[in-house]
Length: 137
Image (tube, rainbow, N blue to C red; front, side, top):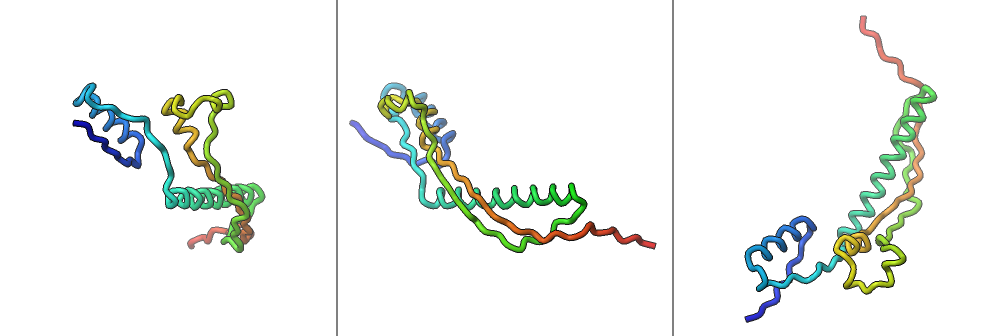
């Protein structure tokens, strides 16, 4: 008897553990194909959102440091605008791109299927004079 089972994993480590378990228990009676990687539309959208949030956080941190340097206090944001968002899939090395996809190692396939995202934001913050701490008498 022959059967094909297709399983979708969301975590690479769990997939590896399951493959190892099946090979241990079923030995040569099981054949495990190379994994195929893909990204759901929701996961790509989540990646874009996270990139924007990190860009805003980085801008806030830089503005905070500049205010500290010049003796001012950073106020609330007055304008936040995402100017650019980019995403790209990881690239395999040029000398490897000529090889057939089936001959790539799992690590190379992961690298080539990995999606990266970048976000460029423009933020205007309110800047206040240094706040004086009230003295309690």
